[in-house]
Image 1: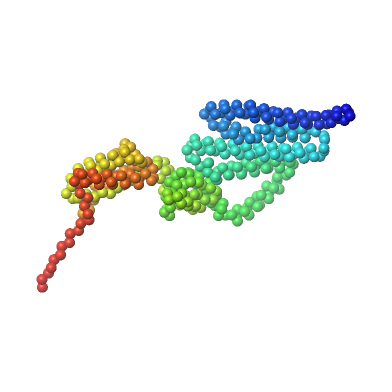
Image 2: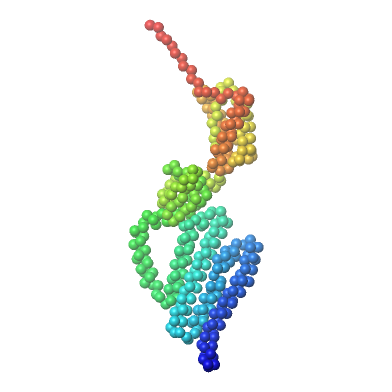
Length: 347
């Protein structure tokens, strides 16, 4: 009896000890070391450590177990050949889990770089999915190579199949590469307010591998194929400076004191700029007479707003205040007048 127990210990003792040791190391690292590293990372301004710790947090215990199980099963001489199969399975899971973590880290790094640059494009679906796919494919190839499976025929088949697929999905691939061009050239970015040459206007909310989503101010979503957007003429209101000027036409009577009109108009415009939300404070409005109209002397008032959409309330407030001030100052805004001369001829 003692000989059997001793034999079992000799056969199973080392593998079990290695597995238990791996579990203990993983638990200790997860419970004490990893948690303290997270607290230290939160105190630093460097964000890369947060990305790495967040990505690896869920896999520390699993990796420790898989590493110990691989060592125990590959080094043991029991239950052959199943121990070899188990070792390969543990190695496969380990490589795939590391691949997933690397994908998370790369996506996090892209997001950090985008935030630092203010560009925002790596956070869109097309770049995050592309990064994940590339890394996962590399991980799968590494797994096949570690299992002694030749990947050369697979790469050849993928090359031939890829050519056939590219011909069949020509339009889809055109949209895909057009989306990459849009993002890399920063023609438009998520958050920009744009107007297309076809008349659509709205905010860019996302750029996927196939379409760009344009959200109208009426809350209607327009899906635009990337290939069409890349060749379209686009007016981007937010490409560099979101501020833009607006022009408000005004007409006054011919008998008005134009200098008085100019002064009052500029004062009203200045008050609107400084007091109305959306106006650019400190901006000096421009008042320019430009035309002798049929029934009035016409002028244009140039205001400035912070971003597209603010001009609605600014123009509304300016017209309301100017009309009230003109009335108090006795400045007439004439109706259209046309004088008709009628002559009767006597035969």
